[in-house]
Image 1 (tube, one colour):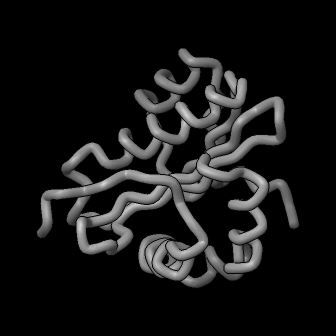
Image 2 (cartoon, rainbow, N blue to C red):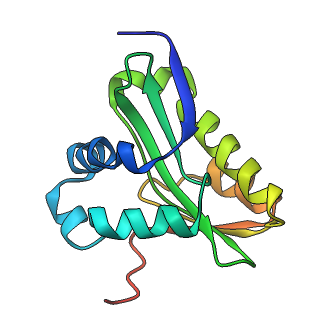
Length: 141
């Protein structure tokens, strides 16, 4: 396992690897009901530089999170990291990077949608004005 991990803005050229990551982590039914390649291209254009990927030095995407805003509140979705890389605080690095990008455009509060809900994460996000919404909450299609 390569120890050099770069966290950077998600770009259109990363999308195929990001979709593979989400498919590997969340399964195909998640993608079928969630997001397509064309959806991601549009989202990244509307929210440039907010979403993050973590890559090995050879360019393999090993972590990703989708992030953006509506101009008032921020939104973070689909945080995923391959299990073998979870020991390097990559999730925190991606979150810090994306939250920083939102702050640069004046976003101070928002919502994070997550499959894995825990008290520590809730407390951390609530302390900075964000609300954690568990993935089990189904708002319909």
